[in-house]
Image (cartoon, rainbow, N blue to C red):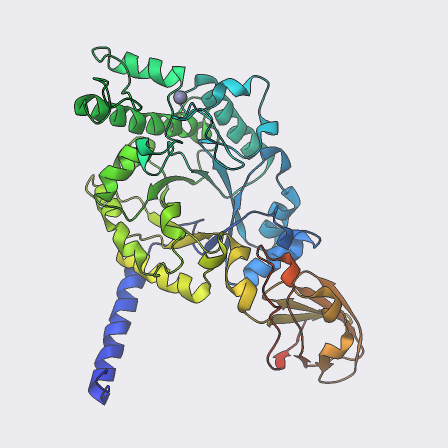
Length: 467
Ligand SMILES: [Zn+2]
């Protein structure tokens, strides 16, 4: 049983918490434009059949200042959403995948030659095609694709995500790669005195990775350097991002997992060497992606970033002061849905672990709050005879279109028009306040469907601001 807290203990506890908060505020770096950001993939149904303005308004109503647009097809970027966000003062960063593509239809003829060769040639990542970061034509094409996208659309930042080599568990995984002809040739050029790349299939082979440890160490070095040179070429190389857009903030991603000897192990398995990456590429932000075996733990505690401290220390040991941020997943699997309270606790732990740029997450609408938090009106702005209510989430459009759910302090509601999380009320008179009751969210727009709608438990009254 816990000892009851007496007055002095409580005060001391509060003082300690205040000191901790101040310490966190003083050491927290507001890294623009990555501060208070959330990843969004607008191809999900949650964002469809509503205006782009309503999506932007919902993100802002939830306190976010930056949308990190995770682009799965450069040919289908929702430019209207980018414009709508920037119009209301949100920043928008462009995120693109480095080690492959979700949209092979975007790739030019002959792209099949860019495929990574995995240890099991028939193994595939679901919906995703790994492309070799050592293939010179893929590098050239990827650099041009990013530059052209930045020329076409105004963004506030760029991040290149997932430049690891597959895969978690390293050579034990059938997805381990890349073992293509370009990688083999490049390794031979770099280490001409070696007999070739390690063997990963035959334990009796003299070059087997468990037998010839020196060869395997050089192979690990080669993979880590390959990632660094891929990113360096795109960001700092001729015709690259910094030459064309010298003021654009650039972030790159590494990866982290709670495994024994984490820094060495992840470098061996996935070729990510954070210290090498930040010293070579000199990004404006380094993001530690949570590897899937960790975020898929149903009971993942929010303080798990503390286990990632060695990844931060490895970078700081080089003298680098690059801002570091944690990226986590808040609901790609049904039993791993996490809400804002969990995310806040995770943010505090990440900062304690030295990730001074806090936390960002994949992806906004996967949050547990989209399943459980009741709808709540956040603002009521009025002009002429129309009051626009901004809610914290997407509403059940049929229910929200019924004027009976809105009671103005004077006059009456003549009609209600619903757009995602926005409701436009046409009113008679000029009410000072409006009381909203009985609304529900729209469970059909969630990723996982077998959860009931969240309904308002009690009426909420808010002041109307007339313009
Ligand atoms: Zn390759």
